[in-house]
Length: 436
Image (cartoon, rainbow, N blue to C red):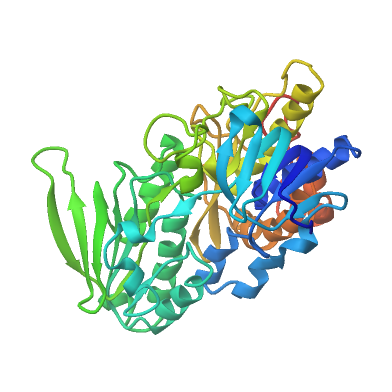
């Protein structure tokens, strides 16, 4: 960790030490070992956030999702443990919350996003008690599992906001696992109503995967209500208030009683980004970025990726896996005065757990078309993909993705015998694909 003089200079400044920031830092170090790199990150903890779904489903202790940030900073990279308070891209500078000024030649913006718990009145006060839980926080994910286990029947409501969220399938994953658990316990499943109340107009953005998920919902008897946006929680009274926007008729509010409420907060870019020149147009304050090169349209020495970027794809660790090599390659090209030839195709993946023994590995691109890293139909629920989600992906995150291993085939090399035993084969990505 660095000292804190009033002004410091660096060749490359990476703002954010999460999945995107650490992965890009490692990729840059591998490709240009002498490159001076600084990471600006306030937290001493680094979380494997996809694991919080597994925590809420009783499949992983929350401690396994955390590592020390210091242990993940690449050797030779300077870590300034502070947060950005002001972006001044015209002067190639960032001011930290400690008042330090950092000058850069190129910047990677990878701050992640901000959960707006306070945008739903009563939610902050209700979380962690009265059956109100959420897997979108390491603090409350363990309570999700406690609530599922303590559930004695009644109404279990699972919500989804209308804003972009990280891992858009996560609100459903916990619902399917909870439904499995309810039905496995004598008497509880019979007396239980499971509801999915989402502010969106459909169950998933990709039609091919949405068709499968509609079958899952119908098979389970889940009451799915679309254009239902959670706007208030009265935890003590166990009442959830929704703004309902029907296809026909006037919007109105409706109250529902719950015995369990898994709430997903609205999400935006962090305020420091949303209030800066780097924010793009439209709601949310997301950082502007060319969807192929990830270069900021206003400042060519700035590259944006991860949850903070305004890209027309889902915000997942799988998307970061595709974006990071593109951002690193194009940043190097920018510094060296070469054309930006690396293009991101929008690849993302959302492993949708649809039960305790099956997962829909929803891989897709900017065109919202299914793609598959495996030589199988990706629109089918599979036990093999459940193993991939629960067993392989956490290991791959810590041991292959964050260290900047560039090729998918190398990700799975330690698991090659198991992959073949599951009847799968891995497809090499194209050289220009986002996950190359």
